[in-house]
Amino acid sequence: MSSKTENRVSHPWRDAALPLLTGGFMLAALIMIFFVVPNEKVQGVTQRIFYFHVHLAWMAFGGFGFVAIASAWYLKTGSPRADQLALANAEVGLLFTTLVLVTGAIWARPIWGVWWTWDPRLTMSVVLWAVYAAYIMLRRLGRGDEMITRYAAVLGIVGVLNIPILVLAIRLWRGVHPAVVISEDPEAGLKDPTMIWTLVIAGVAMALLFTWLVSLRARFAAIDDELETLHLEGESR
Amino acid sequence: MNGLDFLGYAYSAVWIAFFVYLITLGRKASRLEEEIRELKK
Amino acid sequence: MWQILRKDLRIEWRTGEILSSMLLLSLLIILVFAFTLEPSRLRGPEFLGGLLWATLLFSGTLALNRSFLLERESGAWSALALAPIEPGSIYLGKLLANLVVLLAGAGVLLPLMVLLLGTRGLQPDALLPVSLILGMVGFAAIGTLFSAMASGTRAREVLMPLLTFPFLAPLLIAASRTTTAGLTGEPLEAVQSWLMLLGAFDLVFVVAGWLFFDYVLED
Image (cartoon, rainbow over all chains, first blue to last red; front, side, top):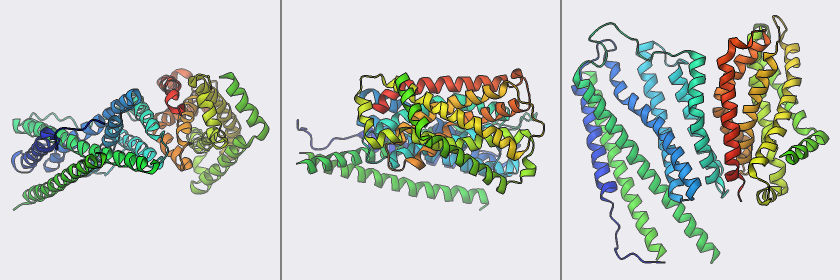
């Protein structure tokens, strides 16, 4: 085994830049959303959740794609890092999907009057949540079976294949539901440029948060894997 | 201080707390990674 | 592929345990539906399609769960992995065997349900068997793949439904609609989009299962 010449391996991007940027952007987003941006004309105060909710949804869906990509990479190369990334993306994706559902409900109650409807997007989010959960349960319940990471990878890819079909099915089922009522009022919607800025900053903040969380989770997954290998090596001596 | 401002301060405080927590996690990960490197030698 | 199919069918023919437990469970589920929901309210054919698929989902998952159990427990799993047969063929063989069982179950269950829950307004047409077959192919495709994966774990009985149900969401929606239409005599054209959706679902997942079975079977 080759020995490293340096004592510490440094990761300036991962350890310093990412956390700082995330912290900064999140704080900026919070300030924009709560103190700076004006109320939207039609929906009023509640609409502010939207700035987070929309990006949470994007990242939740994106996470799915990342799980699939990492899974495919794992199946092709067997790289443990790929497997760890798949797991990390799945768990953070599940978290974000949960937040999407919660923020969605909080937004819906004042606007639509109900906590929940079987509208296409919400139904989609619930099924997405279930598929994420299935992936994670497979890994948890399958602990000990050495093939489990393989199976999980297959699941990850098959899950993504299901998405377009799911979208079609739900659309057919429920009709394309406009998520926001289209208003004739020229001042309604995202008219103020501050709103656009808030949206962008919140978007960057969410993407950074997702990345940071995945990076942390993946590191711990790698640590678990390393410990397990060392443990096994120790036993076989 | 109206409701919105209050929420703003509250959520900012929550974020800062969470941020600190995540930093601690990162430090813990680095420590564990270092330990593993040592064990492997 | 044909060998696997024949072998599985022969085992099933002799013991009949998968099919009989599936049917028994289906009957019990119908009873549960009858007790929990007012049967008089469920008289119309609109409910029949949905109830049929809901019942078949639960009992069918049980049947699918068993499909690899024999191999796992007897150690034949490794033999399959090492054998010079293409994994894809193994998958297809298993798929067809499961399909036969599932369709048999559906075939017995449907008249039973009609009997128990009311026959008013029924005009079955060709759409009915078409919808059942299309739906079952998709069900079997996903179920066979996931059963192979779950059967290796300790918690396989709970894992199977956990994995399959979310994936079957589009199938359930489409199959219920088309089966209900098949029961009420609607023409094929009325549910065209649903049928195409089912077809797409079946195609995607049979091919996916066939392609990915390599990775599932390797030892």
